[in-house]
Image (cartoon, rainbow, N blue to C red; front, side):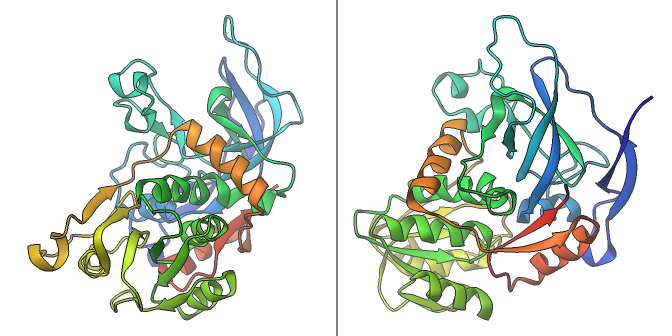
Length: 341
């Protein structure tokens, strides 16, 4: 007899206020060789889920189940792959993240840049994700959650934290430098903690009053509006907000030689730039695409060692649409997490 489970699926992408998600009853997935079946305990609510639900990203899998910040428990294993050593046992707690698979053979994979793999696939976009009671994942792409994090605190680490870590590296912050964070949701509030722990001076620029208050509590030197200059020139900046019109403001805030890293998977159009005002003095603009598994392992180790903690708001599994509406409203304090198991 086939077991069933509850899952949210994107019926037809559209504005989140029009409720594009529907709650359905579907069969529990069967783990293929090399995969594990995970009973989902929690799943973080990420802005990428909102992009998938609203259609900002092209449809890769019709009626997909979103969610890629998954903490759960292994309840079944597929057959072992020839020559592979099992990484997880029944009962182990694991994390499922955005990067789901890569080809392993293209020039990017061979060069250690699997985040640029030409055949990469992603949880909650190419395959069903964690807005469900069960999910499957290839063992090679799952993470062991550090013991110091419960299921709620661990969920945002798996995308918000990992992507923030890669964005911080791409931003080329000098030791003891000044970093601007544009937008201050799930990813930025974890990145701020990591930067502060490394001796960086952090300035937050965001529209939400609650987000600004959180930034100051965490130790930011200032918190102001994204369309105003920070009190000091910045050595580096990271744009987390999906708003291209902020790019000129962030570039104008950079000191000579500064770097702006754009961290989102989706960005609205960037307006015309003035060369002298925005790009001269050897300012650099770079983007961030996904992450490598090495990024994930490094960040989780650092998060445990440095005591990085996600500030979370829990939602019941049945309240997934409301959680995305809250995220879309913009005044987010920390990260939303669905409690499922």
